[in-house]
Each structure stands twice: as C-alpha cells, then as structure tokens.
Image 1 (tube, rainbow, N blue to C red):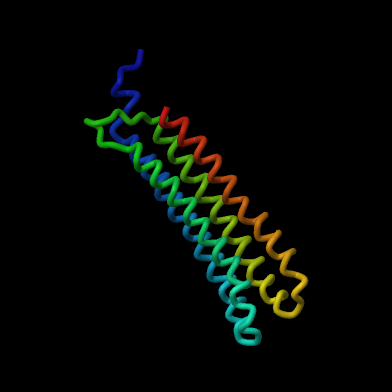
Image 2 (cartoon, rainbow, N blue to C red; image 1 turned 120 degrees about the vertical axis):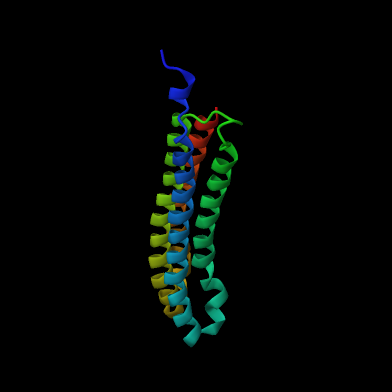
Length: 163
C-alpha cells in the first residue's frame, strides 16, 4: 500500500508550474507572431490605403485573444498550487496541470502562426479587392478556433486535476 508521501512528492508542484510556463510562453509566442506577421501586412496596406487600416486590425485583435486564453489557464492552475504544508498536491494534479498548460499553449502557438499568415496575405489582398474581406474573416475565425479548442481541453483537464 502506498503512503501519502509517495502520492504527494515534494517535486509535484514543479509539473504544475511548468504547465503555467508552457501556457504563457507558447501562447504568447503565438500571439506575438500573429500580431507581428499581420502587422507587417497592415503597415503595407496603410502606406497605400490608410482608410482600410481599422478593418485590417482584425487579425491583430484575434492574435491577442490567444494570449488571454493562456492567461486564463495560467491563473486557474496557479490558484490550485499551494506550498506543501497547506495543501497536498499530488503528482497526478501536477501532470494534469502540465497537460492543460501544454494544450492551451501549443494550440495558441499553432493558431497564432495561422492567424499571422492569413492576416498578412489577407489584408494585402483586401487592399486590392474588397470582396475578399468576408473570406479573410472566415479563415481567421477557423484559425482562432484552434486556440479555443485548446482552451476547452485545458479547462477540462484543470477541472479533473482540481477534483
């Protein structure tokens, strides 16, 4: 039979904290890439058609949302971690929190990459042909939803770890 110290080792919070790091690092790298890549296209559009800049900011806003997803999961994970005398933090919880952080972080990275590429090419195409706008927004939504799927999985994993 296992004793309580074997189920709650002192290094278990490391995995939960690494989940926070995975979420924030990868999620914010995805958001930063999406913002930078689409920002290059917006700067190009602003040079020739300054009247289109406000509508062209949609990819930048969608990239920023990815960082919010990572922040939400990081705060939820951090609220479950306490020092060992105050709360027994099991290895299972540590691994579940790490998986939650990786889930939202890596999907945020992938979504940010997709939003950046679509945003750059999309706003440049929108400058020359205004009918492309609806198609660009739909593609951006499908790219953004990848990050949302990661958030949903991370929330489910976080709920399982807390219970």
